Amino acid sequence: MNAPGFFLAMLPEHLVLLGMVLLLVLDVLGRGRNAALPLALACTGAAALVALVLAVQGYSAAPFAGHFSVNPATLLAKALVLALALPVLLMSRGDFGPATAAHETGPGSEFALLLLSSLYGACLMQSADSFLTLFLGLEILSIPVYTLVLLAYRRPQSAEAALKYLVLGGTASATFLMGVSLIYGATGSMAIAAFTQALGSGSTMAQAAAVLVVVSFFMKAAVVPFHAWAPDAYEAASVPVTGFMAVIVKAAALLAVVRLFGSAKLSTPMFELVAVLPLLSIVWGNLAAMRQPSLRRMLAYSSIAHAGYLFYALLGAPEGRLQAVTFYLLAYGVLNLLAFAALPPADDDGQRDRLEHLKGLFHRSPFAALMIGIAMLSLAGIPPFPGFVGKFLIFKNVIAAGHPGWAVLGLVGSYLGIYFYLRVIQFMFMSPDTRALPTGDTATARRWAGVASGACLAATLAVAVFPGWVLSRL
Image 1 (cartoon, rainbow, N blue to C red):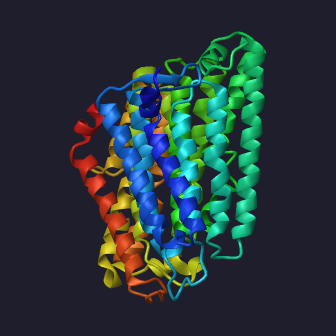
Image 2 (cartoon, rainbow, N blue to C red; image 1 turned 90 degrees about the vertical axis):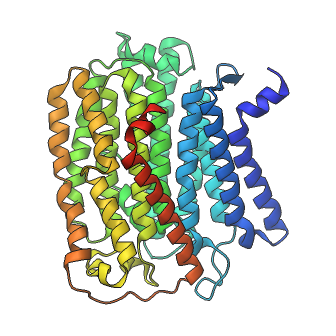
Image 3 (tube, rainbow, N blue to C red; image 1 turned 135 degrees about the vertical axis):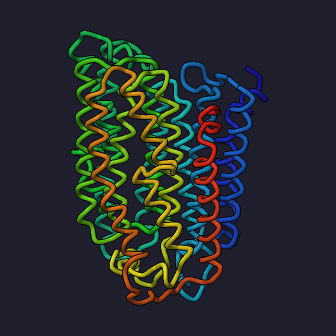
């Protein structure tokens, strides 16, 4: 393959890498803080656009045969992950933007640099053809996030939450490496195709290896029973970082899992593992969310339930997995980010998203209340919002694969989530106004958050009004 071919095949990654290099140069010159977010937005947006254009053109290449390749499906996955990062960058203006009276000594370009680093790993995972490349991408994705949790130190629990997330991530990496080593011992190959060989093997070691690899991704996605510390990390991090962890990290992991499973059909014991634990995540995530005092922590448990829905897609027919997971991630990601972007700012981060302070939000901030309300209805799976279409696709594929009983159980578990989503709406629209939260954020920061909300709303309307058009291109 010639040099232009190598460059074009990895152009999305190169654009992200270019942003990282420019940020480092600007930081050395002392201009990193003011230019960080615009530069990160430009590089991320350009990378997403390039990946989308190449996917539409049907571009395929293998610049590093056996380790890294691209095709329309992988390019579309990269475009989705990169596009979902744009609202995160927009809403981060209040926490990580230029110095203001409220944030005179806050972080400079570190947030943008760490986020781009993590995005590079997310893109690398989507093109991995070997476990070596997949592990490299997984670690590049994860390591910056541990620092991001601490970067905007807004509450005393941030250090503890970062440590918990680090331990959970380290355990997931160790479990992944153990599974990969056993797969190599059983098949003699490091290609991800060896995973499907292990799935269909009668060897106990090969099946145990496949289970360990899947469990490592369960940890990354906070599937029950590996979920306990995720809500602490989500709540203690700043709002943009919470959105990044809940959406981009989960999207990168789930898209990589679908690529890992390929066209393999599940059989015992993998079928029971992928059916039971995600079902428990759906039920427990929805039940635990009912008792949470803050919107951010409630959405953390909601993300545990949604991880269950996403892994449930693996029970469906292989040919429909990628479409169902991609559409669900698009709907879930956009609506989650809409809720985070519309959350009213406040000086006290601990009080910012407490449900009692959202009472009467419609009377003092109608736009924020409407945006959060739309997000809650979609995440609950209420038609005609995109969340309903996403759940419909997953459960339809599970039934089509011959597992109606599991589909019914998952559907019943999803009904448990309706209560706490509607509870948020009741607080905002049907409760008297309590008190306006004091805000130390600048009007500029609020405008950027409004832009993020508008972008998410536009994507929501497009997916809700034209779901068939979107599905035909996935």
